[in-house]
Length: 263
Image 1 (cartoon, rainbow, N blue to C red):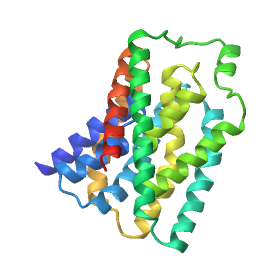
Image 2 (cartoon, rainbow, N blue to C red):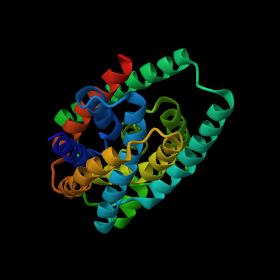
Image 3 (cartoon, helix red, strand yellow):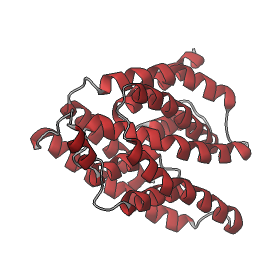
């Protein structure tokens, strides 16, 4: 019965990730720790690889639908991957980061996510909806930031924060993408968030695997449910009204923000 519980949890989280881009770290890690009783260090390491393989499945599904803005993904990855590797190297050399510094960082992140959740909920209720289909010239403009360095710098910030705090890339990534690309249709925002998170969580997850903090049988059970789930979620993202997705996103970001503030 417990095995079916892992599979079902993977399916639910995978579906939510495919629909919103958020939910890997924000939902799965607390589920593993508080519901299934998995040790925290093992839950974090296992969840990072869970996110990498689950989001890889989602990326393939979105790519087949041709809605992944690869230019956006490339710019974010150009900042996040080197920052992740550099942060890992610094932590190996200097030892664990100061707990007070990490607490301040997570609290600040939590407050930012809560404000983002409030703004997103307001836009879902009162805001003007962005068209889902754009002409080629409109899409090129929507996927171009005010300066090319901004997504690279924000990507570097995300890579550093994820490595230092174990905060899932999804919630922070969606927030950054919504700020940098406000005219990009929401399904493309979700697709970009999922695609860029694959190499970032894979690098971090393999680092944990090298330390022995990955439960491989547990990972297999979670993926058995999550891969069909994220395929379903990525399909639903194209047909679910933006107001519904934004409302669900606001709830998930509020959950993640509250969790970070209360750590």
